[in-house]
Amino acid sequence: MSADPFTLEVIKNGLVVANEEMFQAFARTAKSPVIYEVLDFAVGMTDSEGNLIAQAPGVPAFSGVLDFAAREVLDKWGDSLHPGDVIVSNVPYESGTHLNDVTLALPVFYRDELIGVILNKGHWTEVGGMAFGSWNPNATEIYQEGIQLPCVKLYSEGKPNRDVIDIILENSRLPEYTLGDMEAQAASMKVAEKRIQALIEKYGVDNVLLAMRKLLEDGRKYALMKLKELPKGEFEAEDYIDGSIAGTEEPLYVRAKITITDEDVTVDFTGSAEQVMSPINSPYPATVSGVREVYMAITDPHAYPNGGFFSPLKIIAPKGTVFHPIKPAPTSTDWEAIAFATDLVWKALAPHIPEKLTAGHFLSIIATIVGGINDRTGEPFAIVEPQPGGWGAGHDMDGTSGLVACGDGETYIASSEVYERNFPVLVERYMLNVEDGAGHGKHRGGFGVIREYRILNSQALVTIQVGRHDFPPWGVDGGLPGPGNRVVVYRDGRGEEIRRISAELLKRGDLISIRTSGGGGWGNPLERAPELVLEDYRNDLISLEAAREIYGVVIDPQRMEVDWERTRSLREKVGGSVNGL
Image (cartoon, rainbow, N blue to C red; front, side, top):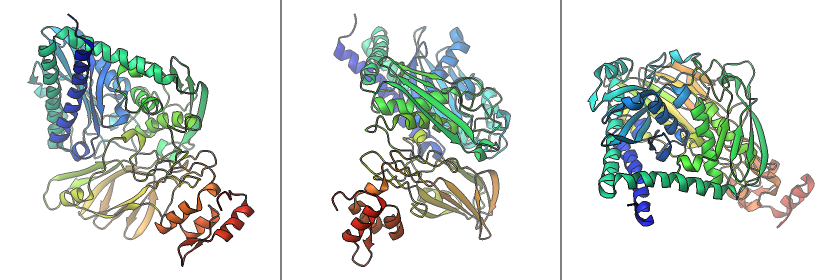
């Protein structure tokens, strides 16, 4: 007998909570800081056909890959799956992102019936390849980026496949970290499996399967309801990816056309650049993830992210392009193109949905690796992290400062004290980047950060890539762009601005100065309330010159007050707003 609607709701929420508990279990037991501090992973489950039932994504850039991974497992293994099997996969083109992001999949059975697949996708700090940390801005093909695990069994009916595990560990420069993260992943999935089996025992397998279908049905109904609130029609945007990180003489042209109806949202990337011999390429599942991020933003960011909710979304990305590369295209810094998949849709829709979307933000992950062998302990160490930056202004508010980029949404910034205690580095400065500023406007963008690492070891290997430098964060409705991202490396006191380095050798005393961009502004700066300009000056966020020349506001620095008469005169002269003056 089918459960009543109230019981079905209990089961539905039980399935969602099983994923959330799996998320917390992995975060508490992982070996690497990129997991337990940064939360660079996502977990979820599908039904027996690979439809996403529920997920708990620490990283929004994983919002589109878990169901692809489940379908890959089901297509390859089919009837050869057994209770206790765990499949491992990281090849990016059909189900992934880059090789560091390793997916484990655990099929869930009731007696002999497959009822679903539990998935955990996490960033392993080291999977081999030509550079420490495995993601490599200089890679020209995937074979240089690390070991490829093509959807093979890590556990067979509960028993570890030692041959596969030995191959994985032999290809890692940090085998203890790799093994610790792998075992924590597998154990967390067992937690979710236990919770699902408990639901089956209490309510019956038929009711659990019915709850799965109801999650998908409710998700689609809710999505269609939210689509009715959106503007209808075609919207387009174009942009460029910096040539210096794409490995090309010219920047890469990218574009998107978005068509919104009451029934679906179609995003078409046709016309964007072909794939490049640089690891910025975004595998198709990752491109889907990038679009799903902004799709949730314009519908409901708090909705249950499942296959039903995402079903109205259609994404077109021709094969062989930067948004749908084919082998052997490298993908280890795929976040650069993934972010543009998000940003193009965002840029096209922001003027039309201002209550949901802001101006452009710093966008590039500015992902950083600092690692090597610790002189004091003789043990390997590795800092692997995204960097925060400035987000764009809204139509009615200033932008937010010091947040990670859109693709890393729920990840945290690791503690400087944790790094200084565990690794031979000194975080010399960590502050808002008021030196480079933010995009000015009626509402200004948020500020990026300055983060500086002083090397205290005899040597360290540093990998970093800097996007959104040549084509900075965009403004809306007359708002000015942000300043762009940049990184300066100081050796022997001499600074050199870099765009991408891979396992570059730095020595004791060298300094890495990361300077992320502020977000774009919204509206004409000359319409900004003088009181807000004064507040920014009092907080050392802008200079007297910027207040006068950009905002048309004259400030008396002695009395720390607006000179209203001179401000009125100046704004009348330059054509700014004098309302309220």
